[in-house]
Length: 356
Image (cartoon, rainbow, N blue to C red; front, side, top):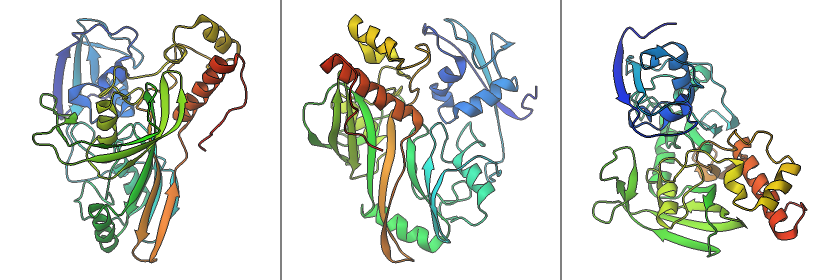
């Protein structure tokens, strides 16, 4: 094990009883470590830089009430990016820009607590020439996605193209479409949410509806499919506020599934989807919907940046790209469809209204 020689020490006590919560998953949601990816936390645990009651533990350790957790966060040079061989799902690339399908559980750029393991570290390994307009820690980054949001992102290679694309974002000319699974059955087929968003009054890492100091924010959503207790939607954000879709959907009483910051849980299990009906549960078990009911179907917010449309300033044409759903979110939707079919018809039938 290699403990950090130059580090920032964090120590706190677990004050809430959370049954069957792994320490790596728990620490991702902690205020002091929200900029760390789960893989970064797992690496720190493996290196002995995260301890419980002064003992080295494994990532699978289940936290207990009154546990004392100590963390040594490495302090690195804040002005350099270390290239790291992290896979990138590239949808398109030319001499001027890239379009990628960002994986969940990866931070876009370095911040407090995660100087490595970010998308920018991966880009530094893959590509030498990236736009430096946003500084040395954000090469090529013209917009961002939350750590646990997957989907399509633009990466810019030179400053001239960066300025053009940034101006399109500023003028709201770039069109984006997200897919999400939310709690509850939304009554309207579509609606427009126009509510200002600002920093949360008490929790710095969160955003909230703020009619006093909030900035204008608008999201339009359309229902794709309704299930028992859940709804699959597409969302078109007309502005780009931090956590906008997550905050807006919570504000109308339909938080995104497995959103630990704006919902009530940080993962979704089969038992959550089945509800209280023994008949449905028995049928579901018989069909092997999910091999291990103790394993979550999805353990990050069910939000995916599905489509982006922009004008390429060099090729001088409109371009549109879509990013396929990640396996966890695709599994969630498939299982909801099968349960819904069972609930309405008493047997599993044809799956309808697929979104590929």
